[in-house]
Image (cartoon, rainbow, N blue to C red; front, side, top):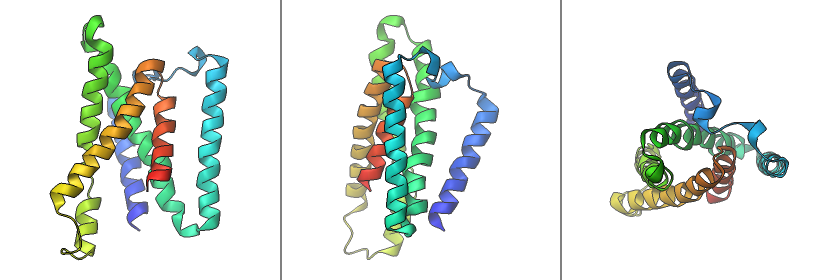
Length: 180
């Protein structure tokens, strides 16, 4: 139920943001036609592999379907569209050409890391578990920011070097697939 509710909340929030912001494809780092053929082939192969992993994990344990759908597809799509899509493009356009690339990378990565403090999973999970067995909240939050910063650095580097959102989405999806 938690995963289904979270998927619905991400889809609802994403739909509202889409309707309010009305981003163009260039605002999200899309532009399939401007990619080289080899790049498109690699993205398609990576997407097919990610989808195959998602399906195979559900076939092995059907209870993982919603959890993996949430963490491997919905969350990366939402977060990457917000941070390395719309946010990246807006910030990059507001900076001078000399500073735009690296500074955008640093700011977006930092914001992405901090974003991971906001998920309610820590509060929810701490409420279910024994307070004495859990590490202190500050330790959990530190590791959440560290993990968010790590995936943010990888995905941000991919966005910075390619100018496209496809690569960060795939990296994020694979990270979440194996990082759960």
